[in-house]
Image (cartoon, rainbow, N blue to C red):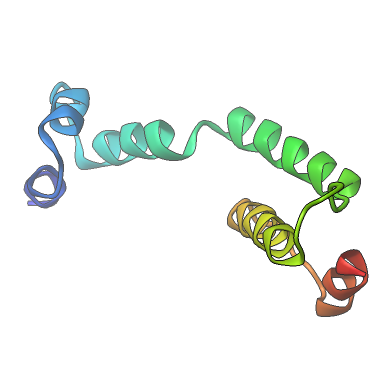
Length: 95
């Protein structure tokens, strides 16, 4: 039943990606690795985003609005990768 639920929600390309899987768990794990990456990929992405956060500065000629969008986008990526922030830390970073 779980296999049917998973396959009914997929595009044709995603269906072909998991069509040879034997169990719902194998299907799920394959889809998760495809869309989120393996734990090594996640760790690498997290380190890249942390480094970008540490070096984040407003670019010459960049509007405050554009900087805020870039900042928010970066923070959202880090939060998705389980990085936690205190509100005070974020406020100080923007200043």
